[in-house]
Image (cartoon, rainbow, N blue to C red; front, side, top):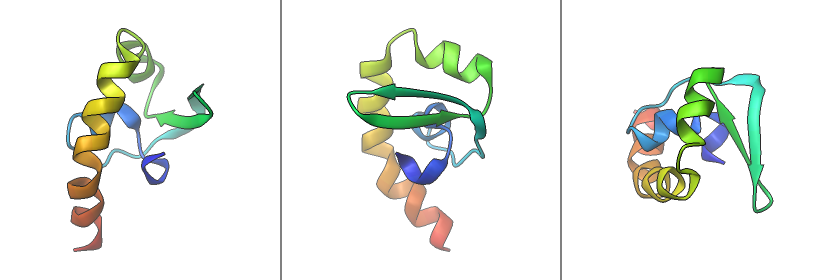
Amino acid sequence: RYGGYCAMGVANEKAVQSDPVTWRIVEGQLYFFASHGARAAWEQDPAAHIARADRHWPAVRASLED
């Protein structure tokens, strides 16, 4: 999801490079994270962070194209 960018970063409206060894699979979707700390924060409420990241992803993706 989110083009391989950190899921927590996208939830916070930022395109943050992810660490390919820091990830989780939720409902068949692969989420990457910038760090173990970012993943731990995301795991406090994955559903809320996914919903927020889904809302922000179009704008974050558009900012990458500029």
